[in-house]
Amino acid sequence: MTTSTTKTAAALIAAVAFALSGCSSSPSTPDPADNAPVTNQDFTAPGDDDRGGKNHPVTIGVVGADGPQFHTLKTNAEAEGIFIELVDFTDYQQPNPATAAGDLDLNQFQHIRFLAQYNNESGADLVPIGSTAIYPLSLFSTKYGSVEEIPDGAQITIPNDETNLARALGVLASAGLIELKEGASPLFTTLDDVEASNSRIVVTPVSANQTGRTLQDPSVAGAIINNDYVADTGLEPSQAIAKDDPSSSAALPFVNIWVTRAADATDPVYVEIVRLAQQDDFGEGLLANSAGSGVVLTIPADKLQSDLADVQAQLRDH
Image (tube, rainbow, N blue to C red; front, side):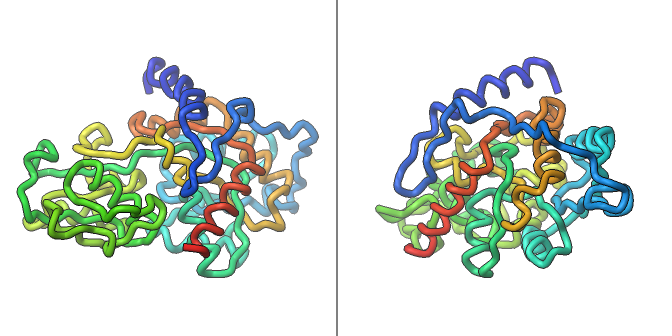
């Protein structure tokens, strides 16, 4: 990653903190003064048989374990006597149940909105203990070079899980490809909110890890692809023909987070892992892995947990 990209991302941290404003459908805005790395001054390295020790590594569920940020994290953690085992998943539906069951200690793949949906549906008490970045959700096409070129009646695939489906419909609406009914909420939009008669394209939901593959289908004009799966298609984030704005007021529910069980939220080893993941070299790896498309944010755990509670309440009341 270039130095200029790093500086731009660092500047965006402060810009996003000021630009994001609370609204009825989004968690409240973090105070810019809170946007600072957590400290863990009293950390003591675990013994070999303790959690995080050589014989009992911390298991972390991720999507895309080959990302450079995770290599950096493992190296830095071992320098402090913490051993990490990454468990790679290809499906967003798997890491949370494994974390809730105790098969994983932590996971890092999802945003607040996704976790809120999972907790409400499962009755789990998973909580965020750190943030990583917000990534735009983007529309790609291998057949058309712009949104304007997509013909009327064309098929666009989007992720089928409720959280990413709502966000994807927002991307298509902002690009002028579909029209949403008046009052549709960014957090809760469904296919029922699409005004089909006033929309240019047909929306087809598929599993998030399959949207990129649908671009090989001659009948598919484009696909909304989550950041984790863009590289699998051979595309670059810069090739997106439409995307949402990670600095918009609706972005906070989509900040990516470190997650564990509520009972373990203050575990000193986990807190230290999050602290290490909020250092510049981890952030540089995140940005390199997303071709500079992410906005790195460091939001305190208590703020994230408050935002999660707000989104869960909104989902229950919707």
